[in-house]
Image: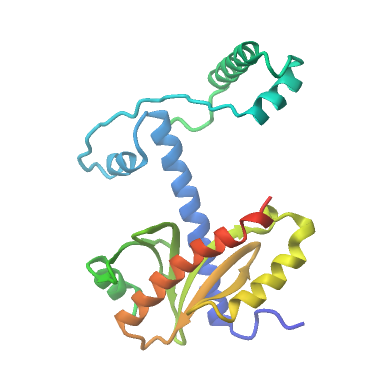
Length: 113
Length: 134
């Protein structure tokens, strides 16, 4: 079945768009990560990178988790607790999140942004 | 119409109450990433060739689709493509896209109409196909 060699110029244009899409994805990811590492909003991080004035509104990193009945059921099974014992489940969740954070800071990401 | 003049004209234009953020993307072929106000989650990529102005929005990747529902998705995409205004569905590499192509002699107003319609259609499509995404 003929593929995309019939319109070489158009094919090149489509590839250029593909490259642009991939590149913009990488760029956006880099800015999201570096903004998070500096407690900045992504748009402020962009302004900072361009040496433009920004308000230095540091975002307040809040960690919230809303657990629904289905979540309690899944977590109870994982921690081998009773689904109704929500306090014990919340405690186990807090310990797991804390362990995750400790692991994360022990092995920080490669980029030092 | 070329990408440079489009960058300038779109940056200051308003069409049907919508504004455009234009970001040229570096590369061998000039490509613009255009964000339409009210549809910021579906940026439009635009490039100009001798034969057409190609506008394209990336929807999702092959690997994001529930494998068992792939034939159903393809059937639905083919059927939706016909009535969908100013846009059609396609695939670039592993990415499913919605796109629109215009004549290189199209007016700025035609291009803006395409951009707004395409960005809005992309949001509708993402909602329509949400069920088949893994």
